[in-house]
Length: 327
Ligand code: NAP
Ligand code: G4F
Image (cartoon, rainbow, N blue to C red; front, top):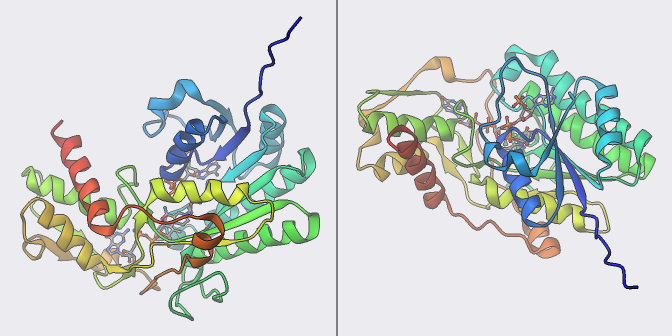
């Protein structure tokens, strides 16, 4: 008698699944045939807007980066082959008012999760969401995997810790742990407090007559902005390599906040200079003035390349915010 075998799907666990990147990564892994588990933390209201459209295709398990036992339990429950650690206190500005909480979550949270992996199943492949904020006051242009770090915020300092503890668990415990050093990546799902979404949403509100000005901080800051949908593919590609190494993911282009405003307002035919006002309240105690990454290693080793270019990204975000206000 011939038996029909059931092929088990590869399981992946995503921390931070309710965030921008978590939602895109979950979609991508589902498209690759994965069984997807997402770690969610307890809150008094549900915040599943970014994953509502895939909620029936994924399994949500509760846990918190502040609580190691919760992560040991959820690893035992979900038995993943791959773990993507995207959860963090991710807003740089908040890290000055909550430096200890940022350290507990964004730095020590990584150790708790790595330790949980070491205890439950050291064969798990681990991805850490490292950040170009680690380069801070840049010591080299463009920034590569070899550029030394000089973080400028409690968030950046916490990410440097998360990066090195990932390297350390690879070197001291043999965990297949990878750190992806990702430059800024945006999308219509970006949180409203980050500058790109603040601008795209502000443009849409001004166009609809709901606001007359948009208050921003440092217009001179320059960032290497890509599309989040492209960047989550890089996370997955990194974990498929048999050797665990770190990679920079970036577009290789940099633009100022001022340029972002110019392009965003031009999408709706407005002149940004008439609406943008500079407000000291949005300036930072220490700024990261300039970031631009070199993703040559990822291009050569993974075949990864940023697909969405700067003007298309800005337009995508503005059009989405217009649509949200006036469906
Ligand atoms: P995001 O939208 O702010 O999402 C952060 C996620 O972390 C949310 O799901 C949040 O859950 C979760 N979280 C926060 N604290 C937690 C805790 N104590 N326990 C469990 N979950 C917790 O961030 P993102 O833009 O998707 O970024 C994803 C990761 O990449 C972050 O680690 C970020 O620092 C890093 N990164 C981002 C960029 C970028 O440009 N986007 C660049 C480099 C690195 P709630 O929904 O419950 O708040
Ligand atoms: O959009 P932002 O808040 O992002 P930031 O600080 O670059 O951090 C983001 O990217 C990092 C990767 O490099 C991630 F690790 C991190 O989790 C996060 O996703 O600010 C971008 C720039 C800054 O220089 C800021 O000073 O925009 C400037 N800016 C000017 N006006 C503003 C504003 N930023 C915000 N949030 N709000 C403003 O009104």
